[in-house]
Image (cartoon, rainbow over all chains, first blue to last red; front, top):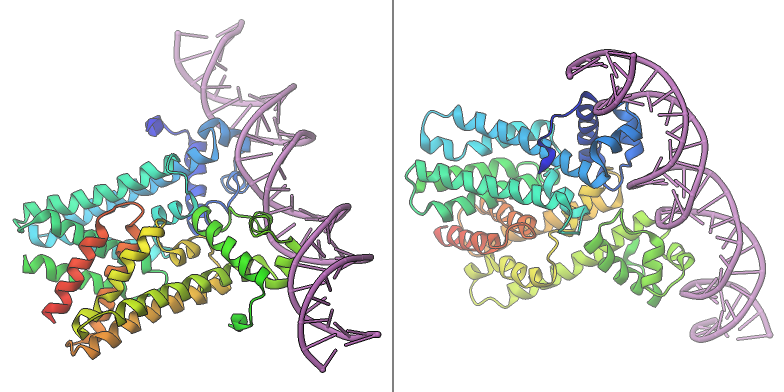
Amino acid sequence: MREARPMTPAGRRIVAAAEELFYHRGITAVGVDLIAEHSGVTKRTLYNRFGSKDHLVAAYLMERDQRWRALVRAAVDACDSPVEAVTAPFTALRTWSETNTRGCAFINALAEIPDPAHPAHAVAAAQKHWLRDLFEELATAAHRPDPATLATRLLVLHEGALATQPLLPGTLSASTDLARALVRAG
Amino acid sequence: MREARPMTPAGRRIVAAAEELFYHRGITAVGVDLIAEHSGVTKRTLYNRFGSKDHLVAAYLMERDQRWRALVRAAVDACDSPVEAVTAPFTALRTWSETNTRGCAFINALAEIPDPAHPAHAVAAAQKHWLRDLFEELATAAHRPDPATLATRLLVLHEGALATQPLLPGTLSASTDLARALVRAG
DNA sequence: CCACAGGTATACTGATCTGTGAACTCCTGC
DNA sequence: GCAGGAGTTCACAGATCAGTATACCTGTGG
């Protein structure tokens, strides 16, 4: 991902507007004209920065991914014990859900983008694998038996709560409780 | 939902084409012209049948819901014991996933439709509540303690597997295993 | 001094979008 | 024999879509 090149001020405003609009209204439903307007930028500038709408979508997802990972890392670091740290992503998810009530941006994006070659697919896959690997790493550090299986189970619980959140409030508590029980049981 | 009115042959072909196209390419990305063309029907007929694209989307989701419920009921009926029946939706999901590899059509639809007043929202919400209630009913019949909590936990596992399925193959097995363990532990 | 990068402003293409109007055919039930 | 529902054909409206063209302004670094 060559998107690590330094962002110009206009580029940052474009991504910020894209985050707001894509997440809340859907990717296909939001046109580049609207994003340009909301970020106070010309459409020409948008295309000079990102080249195409597809690449802007990828940049939008990467930006979200970075924010989410930082939140999870902070939650992990705030834990007192290694066992408690294993379920830290669930407490991060609670905070995250307060301001992100439209489910998982990555799953939502893939729902709109069938083409596996689209740059968004790689970003979404990387995000899920990162979380699964983090669970396994934390489970290993807490000396849980069979950390690989535990990690996959925690991921399913996590994604289940995230995906159903807009439809069924209360699933987050249920999945967090179960996750803690699983980790404690070892 | 007044959609129970008898479907004309053209109406059925339209919904069939809509299912194929909406699920695989996304709702916003598929125009009514394309659906009319794929179902060998005039756009005029489509609007005479369904009134608007929004109502066609609702009809598409209802059709899927019916097929899904029938599959689950068959899986429940095929079980030998009440305990086994509690996790029957997970075996139904395995069958379902073989031909539906793009995740949950309802969650995908809500990802594209922000407006809670859209008829699709009610259909999606009804589907999830039906499954949660079914889990609770089956858990009660199998004399599991605290069937309400168990039902919510099973639902989260189910939705987690369904949502991550396009991205992480293998989560279905993991969630099924855990679901069976939870029910057995009782 | 000037080249260059970031950005603005505006107009444009060609395609596609949802939805409507009006006139027509065909079949079935009363 | 005829009323009415189902479906067709074709034209149309008005908006929006992604992306490009051209010309211009402005600050900064060599």
